[in-house]
Image (cartoon, protein in one colour):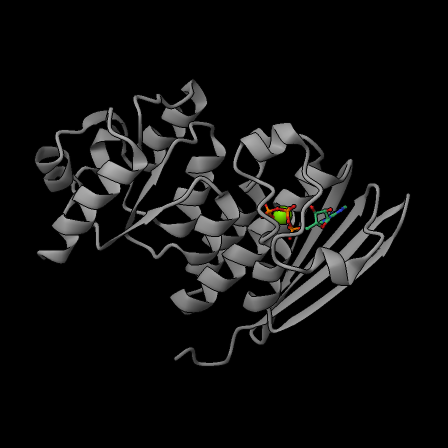
Amino acid sequence: MIVADIVKALNLEVLSGAKGLQREVTSGYTSDLLSDVMGFADAGAAWVTLQTHKNVMAVASLKELGAIILVKGFKPEPDTIEQSDEEEIPILGTELSAFEITGKLYNMLQQE
Amino acid sequence: MHFEYKVQGGDFARAGLASSQVKKVLKQLNVDAKLIKRVVVAMYEAEVNVVAHAYQGTINVDIDTERIVMAFSDHGPGIPDIPLAMQRGYSTASPVVREMGFGAGMGLPNIQSNADEFKITSVVGKGTNLEIIVYLNVPQE
Ligand SMILES: Nc1ncnc2c1ncn2[C@@H]1O[C@H](COP(=O)(O)OP(=O)(O)OP(=O)(O)O)[C@@H](O)[C@H]1O
Ligand SMILES: [Mg+2]
């Protein structure tokens, strides 16, 4: 599936990086620890987190993640948005908790 | 090929820049994608460690057809007990740094597991030297 499919199915808000909505998403990873994501997320993963600062984009870009999903209404910082737009890696928003959105995303990916 | 980067302690906004530049170079050289991933994880974690734990540092990167050598040298507090620092979960990161999602104590173990050669030496009160080597001519499974 692509990022746009997830946005639609899970009713997410596109907060930045809209040019990357066609990126492929092949897995998911939920963590707020950057070195955990760095070490163990796969390329193409949708990353569920509440971290909003620029290093999140550094990790997403270096790991070639599919998208970032910010939980509980958290919003990216301005320099995070800037890098997301530049790299065309979308940051998506939800009001749901990490637990809830991860469950929904998991089900979606299982049905692929 | 030789590259040198300066890293400033506390400058989180620029953390990862050197790693992303090296990644670009390796892509241009058509290095195996799996090898690039290993280099990137190791280099990023070492770069962030200088930012999070030291005052300033220099990264020297040498790339030839055989291997990439990443040498990190920093001025900083040093590491009193290296085997302890190498343990997954051990971290002295400050509360502010932890709030950003650093400080899981996974960086050094991640570096070691992605490196073919890994050497770390440190003098308390002076600084830390870290050398990471990844062989580039080994086919990845
Ligand atoms: N360059 C360095 N200078 C001084 N101390 C360091 C340096 N690198 C690592 N350390 C020490 O080793 C500990 C473990 O490092 P490691 O990278 O494994 O974890 P961390 O940086 O604390 O957290 P994480 O990497 O998961 O964000 C650090 O908390 C710190 O005490
Ligand atoms: Mg670290």
